[in-house]
Length: 66
Image 1 (cartoon, helix red, strand yellow):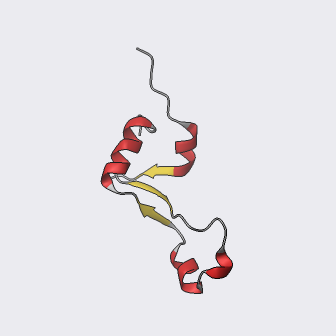
Image 2: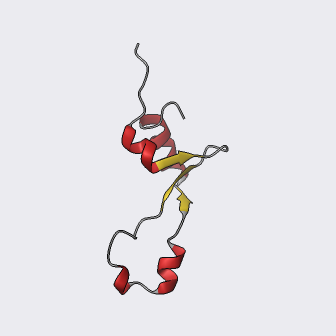
Image 3: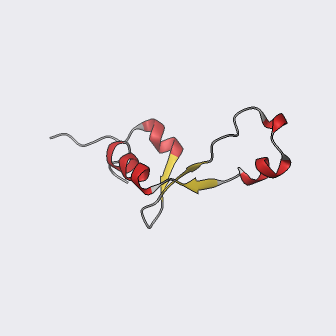
C-alpha cells in the first residue's frame, strides 16, 4: 500500500502540538474590520486550539504523518 500524503493545504493551515492538539489561526479577520471593536480585533490575534473531535479528524485525514 502506498504511503499516505499530507494534504498541502492542511500543512499551511494547521500545526500539531507536542501534546497532540491541533492549532489553527482564528477565524473572523479576513474582512470587515471596520465594524469590529478594537478589543475584538486584538483578541483575534494568534492561534487557538481546535476542538478535540475536529482535531482528531484533521490528523486522521489531512495530516496522517503528524
